Amino acid sequence: MNRLKNIFSFSEDFPLIFTQADFWIFFAAIYFLYAIVYRKKSLRSAYLFAISLLFYYKTSGLFIGILLFSTVNDFFLGKAIYHTKSVLVKKMLVAFSVIVNLGTLCYFKYAYFFTESYNSLFDTDYQIINYLAQFANTWANVDYFTVDAIILPVGISFYTFQTISYSVDIYRKQIKPLNSIIDFGFFVSFFPQLVAGPIVRAADFVPQIRKEINITKKDFGNATFMILKGLIKKMLFADFIAMNFMDRVFDVPEMFSGFTNIMAMFGYSLQIYGDFSGYTDIAIGLALLMGYKLPVNFNSPYKAIHCGDFWKRWHISLSSWLKDYLYIPIGGNQNGSIFSYIFIIIFTFLGALAFADFGMAIIATSIIGGLLVITVFSSKIAWHFNRNVNIMITMLVGGLWHGASWKFVIWGGLNGLGVVAYKYWRTISPYENSNTWLATLWKITFTFVFITFTRIYFRGNSMDHIDRFYQSIMTNMDWTNALAVLWEYRVVFIVMLIGYITHWLPYKTKDWLLDQFIKSNVVIKGLIATVVAIICYQTYAADFQPFIYFQF
Image 1: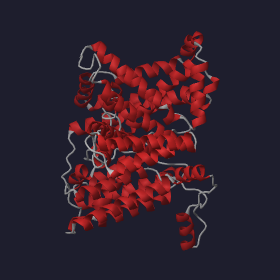
Image 2: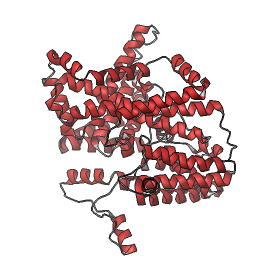
Image 3: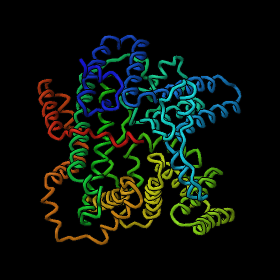
Image 4: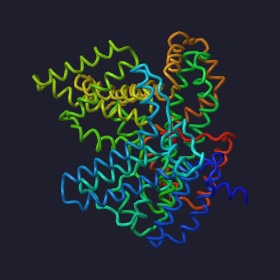
C-alpha cells in the first residue's frame, strides 16, 4: 500500500520513469479506468488531462504551475487571435504569445547562460536570484522555494514549442482554436510525450481529440512492439554500455588511451540514439494503446548519407519545427532578413568574445559586417550568404535549444557547417549521383563519423573536459593496447555491435519483423515480452538512469 502511495504522490526519490516498475503499475491502473471512460469523449479528455497533470506533478512537483500557466495563457490567446479581425492586432497577439512563452523558457533555462556571458563580457560578478521564487515566498508568506537557484522544469522546452506552434498555426489559419480548455490542456500535457517529446503539432493532434477510439489488433501489436523495442534500446543499448564503459571513460578521459576515448565516442552515439529514440518509441506505443498517434521522431538516422539528411532523420519533430517556425520565416534558402543579419552579428561577436578576446570579437564581427556590405553590390554573393546564414542560425538555435551553454552552440554550429559544406561539395563530388553500395557505404560512414565526433561538445561536461578528451586522442593513441581494450570490455562491444547491426538492418527486414510480431499469437507476444523483461532486468541498475533529454 505504501508503494502505491509513493507511485501516486510526489517524491523526488520516486519519479515516474518508463524504465521502472512503478511507472508500469501506474499505467496499468490508469489504463484500467481508461477502458471504462474512453468512449465518452469529454470525460476521456478530462480524465487524460488529469492523469497527465498527475504524471507531471510526479515528475516536477510544483513546477506544474508553469505548465498550467502556459496552457491557460495560450488557450485564450488562441481564441483572441482567431476572432480578432484586425491583422495588426492578430500579429501583436501572436508576438505576445511568443514573447511570453520564450520569456518563460529563457528565465528558467538560460538565466545562468546569459548572466555568465554578461559577467564575462563586462567583467562583473552578478549572481542568480530566483525572483519568481522570491515573489511566491513573499505572496504566500512561506519560505518554501529556493531563491538562490533557478531549477529547470522538466519538459519545458517541449511543451513551450507546442503552445507556440498552436498560436502561430491559428494565425496562419491552419487550424481553428479548441472550444474546451480541457481539450487544449490534454493536447499540451499528454503524458507519454510530455517531458521528452516528440513535439506534437496541434494540426496533427487536435483532430484526434474528439475522434472515436478504435484500437485494432494491428494497433495493439504495433504499440506493444514499439514499447518493447524502446525498452531494449534504452536499457540495453543505452544504459548498459554507459554504466559499464562510457561513463568511466568520459569521467576521466585522460586516464584512458586515445583508442578507448574514440570507442567511447562511438558508444555514445549508440547510447544517445538508444536513449532518446527508446523514449519516443515507448511514448508512441503508449499513445497508440490509448488510440492516439504521435509523429515519428527517428528514421534510422545513422543511415544518413550527409549531414542535412541526418537532420531529416534525427529528432524529426524538432527539426521540422525549426524549419517551419524559424528557418522559413527568416527567409529559408532564398532571402535574408533583418533578424538574420542582426542575429548573426550579435552571435559572432559574443561567440568570439567567449572563446578569444575583445579584439578578436571586433575582427570577426567586422568580417561578417563586410560580407553584408558586399551583398548589397553582388546578388550572387547575397544569394550564397543568405541561404547559408539562415541555415547557420537555425542550427545555432537548435544547439542552444539543447542546452544553455556555449558548447551546445559550438555543437549546433558544427552541424550547421556540415550542412552548408555538403551543399557545395555535392556540386563537385565525383560520386554524388552514384548508387553503388561502395559509394553509399562511404557516404554513410563519413556522415556517421562526423556526427559522432561533434557530439563530444554535447557529452562533455565543460570546455576543459572536452579539451582533455581531445588531448587524450592526440597524445595517447596507444594502438598497441587496442586489442586488450576490446577484450577487457568485450561484452560491452558485443552489445554495441548488435545495436549498430540492428540499426542498419534494411527497412524491409524491420517491417517484416514488425509484421510477424503483429500477426503472432498472444502467447508468442507474451513470451517475447517476458524475454525482453528478463533482459532488461539483467541490465537494470540500482541507481536508475534518467532519459538524457529530460534535461532539455
